[in-house]
Length: 108
Image (spheres, rainbow, N blue to C red):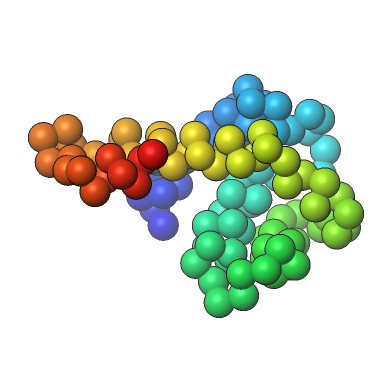
């Protein structure tokens, strides 16, 4: 967990979300909680439904989001944001001399 929070500090997550237009206004959605809910509560959890993702987010964020407000945020720019985070993590943890074809296939 510490490695992930070092790789993706809250400020980086917020700033990058703003750059891509994921967050139009800084209101209820807390991007760091959203990312961690996705990584730990949805992508790695047993219940991989959007409702489960929303419940995971609501349990970790300071303010809850209604189903409509939550689903409204699932946009192409959010998908691009998550792709960028994966790309960033691969760039940061991959050692150039040890990267093989499997990592390159995963990257694409």
